[in-house]
Amino acid sequence: MLGSREMPAQSDVTELLLAAADGDSSALESVIPIVYTELHRIAHRRLRGERADHTLSTTALVHEAYLKLMNLERLNWRNRAQFMAIASRLMRQILIDYARARRAARRGGEHKRVKLKASEADAATPAEPTEEVLALHQALESLGEINERHARIVECRFFGGMSIAETAEALSLSPATVKRDWVMARAWLNRELSA
Image: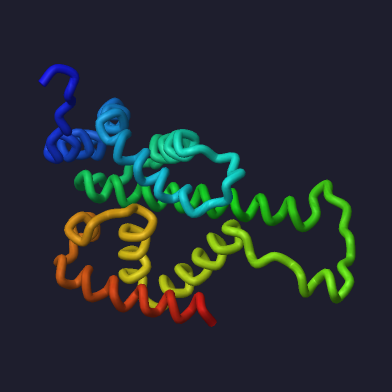
């Protein structure tokens, strides 16, 4: 069909990543255009839960992740799933850094501090998505200290939007292990975040 584009084979991306792992610097650059649509989908999904006036666009998030990917030194690339997991993790870190900078600016910066009366404090709005991102990040860090594998699965599934099979491939685990760990990690995070 004219104008339709076939999705590149996963093996094409894997071959380029293996070439990048062997030192071919242009190979990693060649991967980005091939997986750009999927990176854009992940970024869009991540930004969907942010504030409406968020200044970081989907495209900007993908581009920031791209810059970080290009700066990774001699990473042992294995396959497309691993690449997407790392890109997803970088996007998560960019959003966390953004949320921290926004919170720091709000807590000082160039703003004048004003004390609230008790009645005004009671009427304060609930935490905005920036705070939710930071709370999730802190909970995920705590989970990582307890069980690193569970934290990596959450990163792939929640932040990367990866399927059970893609997560299993990225982390070199069986799909059954990923499914079981995903259920346990979600329950732990729900309990931690509701506390």
